Amino acid sequence: MTIDKSKVAVGFVVAGVLTVFFGTVLAFVGPLIIDDQIVKNTMIDPKNEMSYTMWKDIPVPFYMSVYFFNVLNPKEILKGEKPMVEQKGPYVYRKRCQKDNITFHPNNTVSYREYRKYFFEPTMSKGNESDVVTIPNMLVLGAAVMMENLPFALRLMISASFKTFNEGPFLTKTVGELMWGYDSGLVDFLNTYLPGMLPSSGKFGLFAEFNNSNTGLFTIFTGKDDIRNVHKVDSWNGLTELNYWRTPQCNMINGTAGQMWPPFMTKESTLPFYSPDACRSMELVYQRPGEMHGIPLYRYVAPKTLFANGTDYTPNEGFCPCRQSGLLNVSSCRHNSPVFISHPHFFNADPVLLDYVHGLHPNEEEHGLFIDIHPQTGVPLNVSIRLQLNLYMKRVSGITETGKISEVVMPMIWFEESGYIDGPILNTFHTNLVILPAVMEYMQYGFIALGLMTIIIASLVHYKVKKNKFDGDVVSNGNTGTSAEEQSPLLTDKMD
Image 1 (cartoon, rainbow, N blue to C red):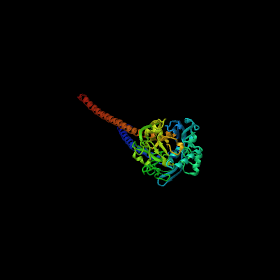
Image 2 (cartoon, rainbow, N blue to C red):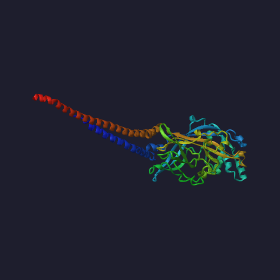
Image 3 (tube, rainbow, N blue to C red):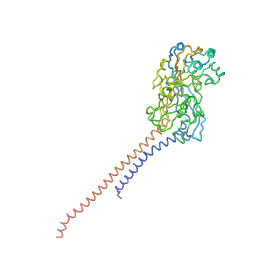
Image 4 (tube, rainbow, N blue to C red):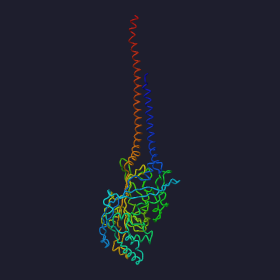
C-alpha cells in the first residue's frame, strides 16, 4: 500500500492552519481567562479559600519598629534653649492582626472588626524595653497648651495639681512603660473626676490604646457585583463621612481599609485608604515600576502634598488650623491635645522645622513611606508605613512647669509598620500570577510558531512531491518516444 505524500502534506498544512488559529485565539482568550481568574480570586468570598484566608488572618508577618527621640538637654529647654535629641531604637514588635465579627450583607458588603496585638522581638531590636529614655510629658506640656486660654487663677491651680502628683515637664521612663503604660496619680485623678478626658482609662502610655484593641467597625465592598469596588470602605463605625475636619472633602472616607486594593491597576491609579489612627483618608501616588522575586510591582509613595498646610495646598485647608507644611494637626480627634503627625525626622516638611531641633537627619530611604503593589491583583507585596508623633509645646504663663520653653513642635517618637510577602505564600503567588500566565503566553506563541512551521514545511513537501511527480511523468513520456524511433529501423530491416 503506497502512501500519497501529497495528501499527507495537505493534511499537515490544514493541521498547521488550525494550530495557528488556536494560538491566535489563545492570544486573545488567554488574558481574558487570567483576568477572570483574578476577579474570582480577589473578591471577598469564603469560597476563595486562599485569598479569603489571606484577607481574614493576614499570614504575612508584620512588624512595628519604634524609635524614641531621647531628650539630651531637658533643663536647658526649660531655659529657652533649642532642644537636642538622639534617636534610640528600633524597638521591634511583631504585629498580629485578625478579623473577627465578620458579617456578610445582601448589598455585597461585609463588616468586621480587626484586632491587633503586639509582641516584643528582642532579637530584632536595638535595645530592650528596660532601656530608659527621656521625652516630653504630654500630660503636662500638652495640657498646658490646651489650658492657655483659661483664667490665670485656674492655670495656677492646674500647675499646683501637677506639683501635687509630682508631674514634671519631662518624663524619664523605660521604653516598656512609655509604650504600654505606667502608673500615674494624675491619670487616676483625671479618670476619676474628669472621665473621658484621656484616651485610656487605665495606665497612660503612647500605645496603650493600640494593644489588644480593634480599629473600629469597617464595612467594605466584597467586589461581587463590581470588582472595581472590592475592599473599598462603605462605612466606618456606621459613618460614611467624618466630623473631625472643617470641609466635606477632608471628612470623606475614601479608598480601602489600607490592606488590599482593587485589581488591574495602571500607572495612573492611586492608592487611597482610610486610616483610623490618622483620623483621615490618605492617598499614595505612583512612583516607579519594580520587581520582587520575579514578580512585577508598582511602588506608591506619599506625595509632598499629603501633609502640606492649607496655604501650600488649598484642598488641605479643612485640616487646619495648620502650622508649617509637613504637619497634620490631629488634635480634633485626639481629645484636643496639641499633637501633630508628620513623616519621620520632618522628611518632606518645611525646612524651618529642622532648625528648631538639633539631631534630626531626614532622608527618603529611611524616612519615606511606600507600598509596593502587584498591579494585576492589587495585593501589597512590600509595605513600609512610617509616621512621627510630635507635641506642640510652649511657655504658658501660670503653669510654671513650662518654664521659658520656646515655641516648638517637638518630635517624640516615630514608628514604622512593615511587612512583605515571603515563603509559601510568595511561591503560590509567583506560580499562579507569574509562571502560569507566562506559560500560557509562551504556549500561544508556541502554537503560532509551530503552526507556521508546519504550514511552511508541509507546503514545501507538497510542492516537492508534485514537482517530482510532474518530472517523473515527463521523463516517462520522453523515454517511451525515443524507444519507438530507435526501434523503427530495426523493424524495417527485419521486414526487408
